[in-house]
Length: 448
Image 1 (cartoon, rainbow, N blue to C red):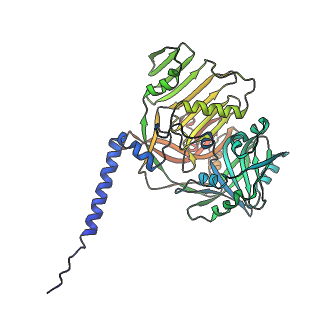
Image 2 (tube, rainbow, N blue to C red):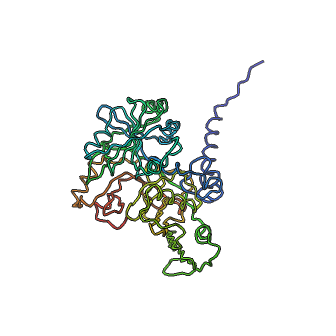
Image 3 (cartoon, rainbow, N blue to C red):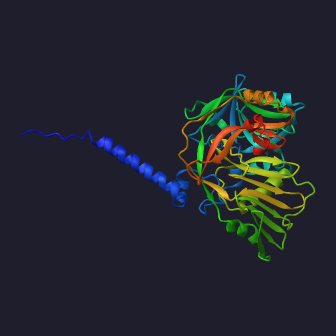
């Protein structure tokens, strides 16, 4: 009796064809009917500011006021650590979560050069914030904290691996350095970060530029493109959450010059630009007590409280800027460690609380939902010196540049109005406005 062998060689190509067809159908369904997949998608990938009752409002103040970059300094070279597979900042935070601060002492450097020299401490990590925060955010790490301690401002946390039992809170503006004595064992595992295979290291350097400590990328850097499904939230949600929170007033609605304007008799006003979903909300009701000189600690706490009123998910949203003169705090969505900088406020929120108690919020009705397949080609950005040189050669007044950083610029997706594409580029803060450096080079200052 012959042993008949079946030929299964056809099975593999058929299975591959079926898998590809399922993938195409699933992707098409997401693009055509995104609302059915938003909740499912938010579980498989972090949302970037979407409204989801399962997650909205659960982020603590410490989740939003996080560092935005991590660098390591050794043998006269500084590296920025990044990864497309893991959240480097969250990983570093988990390694120092058990820090307990015992005592704090203050030192002020006489010059920025001396301050930078101290920052360039050999064998050390630096957790870097995009804007100043205060020690009050670390009150859970201290047995006791005075009001004075809570108001200590800083821009970076320096973690030396060769000095046991101390970390340093450093403030770029005042040049103050606060030495904190901690439990010795708390940061031992941080030394392993630079040995991980899923973390990429790029050479960077901190330099003085126009009086500001500025990060320069010393080599070209590849940054992946990204695309996100977007959803225009119902206007009524925010009318209810903001203006409608006052039960003793009635809301009036009117249309004017392609804008919808909501007002009440308690001093609240919301203006929505119909074509792009840009929202500007103002509250003159004096719900917040006046303060002659509101501290940064109080400002950051009050701003976060107002941000929570929007009831949006803040998973990828980070504190990004603070204007000490206007008391305006800016929060942005961060993708792959870089902020989305959008003229239409996609993925960003601005909260202003003046010393007189007035409130002003700016945000977009369009929220980022879930990432969708994007152009697989990463963008290779030049080093920062080349960017500065191109601006100089174009005749740009370099004295008007306050800052420079890598971020994502949004653009409309050619295939679907429900998707925006995010392309990495250098942004320059020129005359206090963030502009894509390419627009400056081509004299298109008004585009961003």
